[in-house]
Amino acid sequence: MTYRYITTPIYYVNDRPHMGHAYASVHADIMARYLRAAGHQVMLLTGADEHGEKIAKAAKEANEAPGAFAERHAKSFEEAWRRLAVEPDRFVRTTAPDHARVVSECLTRLFDAGEIYLAEYEGLYSVGQERYVTEKELVDGKLPEDKEPPVVRREPNYFFRMEAHRDWMRQLLLDTPDLIQPAQYRNEVLKLLEEPIGDLSISRPVERLEWGIPIPWDTRHVTYVWFDALLSYVSPLGYPDQPAFAHFWPSVRHVIGKDILRTHTLFWLSMTHALGIAPYRRLHVSGHLLGADGRKMSKSLGNGVDPLAAAHTYGVDALRYTLIREVSFGFDGIISHAVIEQRLNRDLADDLGNLASRSLSMVVKYRGGVVPAPKVYEAAEQALIVRSRELPAVVLALVEEMKLGRAAEQVMEFVKQLNVYVASSAPWTLAKDPHAAGRLDTVLYTLLEALYSVSNLLCPVMPGKMTELQAWLGVSAGPGWDRPWGEGVKPGGIVREGILFPKLAGETGIE
Image (cartoon, rainbow, N blue to C red; front, side, top):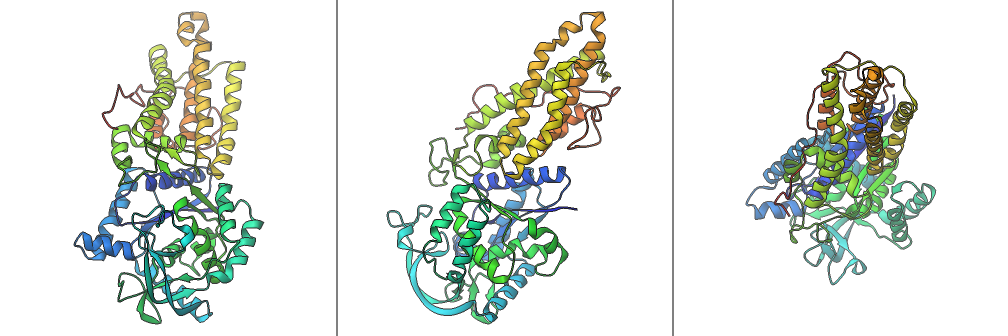
């Protein structure tokens, strides 16, 4: 048995889920679904990062205790994933006792090994990013992702000897060029590693922040939120000695946004190296989602699209499809209401929806809704059969590289090929000729079986609609990733008509 482990970011729950969260989680979910379909034993992990200064500050502003505030927002993330058809196998919470135990054990091991020391520190501290920053990171006096400039802080902190692992990290990236994808992010990290990166402050004094996991040997400090959160990738696996860790960790792929690249490279790689944990197999880094105005989506700019509202307006599957087709993973791109509506109307309603609708309606009209048995396959059918057999491997290869948009594009090209086949074979003309009954049976069956192939290939992307399409095709066995041609839709079965993707007429009224 082969094991595959996929993680989303462990989301900071100081606010409600936004489209950037949805983008990462939908990509991870789709990859997990494809790998399961291909026969792997898959674990998909997501979760809530509930500690730290931002949570404490947000809770105070909401007049809530930090624990109650974090609980409420963690539940909102779980509900969001349910509504967006994201189905994690594990939802880790950093407030869980099992996670806190792993954090404490790791801290103790590192302290005993001399990897952690106490020192007085003064520097620029970003409250928004919850870390110390350097002058060269600032643009116009602050980090680009922060609303406020950093503050000067002087306090005793425990430090992890991150700098001692810099040469190892640099060599790791040189030896494994595909560790971080796309390649521009690997190059960015290599540039950071050319100069000293310093040691990492991993504690905060309780006199300033009480909301966190206590440092086990010094309860006057709590654990830095990033040291805590990054270990939530291993704590749900029963690290260090449970079978799940041995099975799943060697295959781990982290799916993150580029705004947390530094923490998932400098911080996490040095931590795993110090703990004797093998480095992750792959780090998939997404770009920024932009609003219709071409600027990064931002609550303050009001240029974002709420993922749950969009799912309600356009349908969950149309949103999931748009997220992978419209913005290539790793690059910045625009997601707007106009973009989603265009993908729904053109790709899904005009191309796939129209193919399904007229294929099913012709079987109902010409064969009383009964699936006909094919007779003689001619060159046109043979070409489609060959392509349907090739597609699973083509799609899976692209999925492995997190090129989900290109994978879906390959399937949609097959859909266009089928639409051309409908026009060239002209079933409506064959239906008028009694001598062409056998030929009509072959054409109709070919369309139905090809639609079944399409439904399997797109089911990880649009699980709701593709399951619905399979029900209309009379297939009750569930998805079959690589089922041979002729073993999907059975002659004699009954099909039903339906509109798979209702087209939106005119403007939605949303900008």
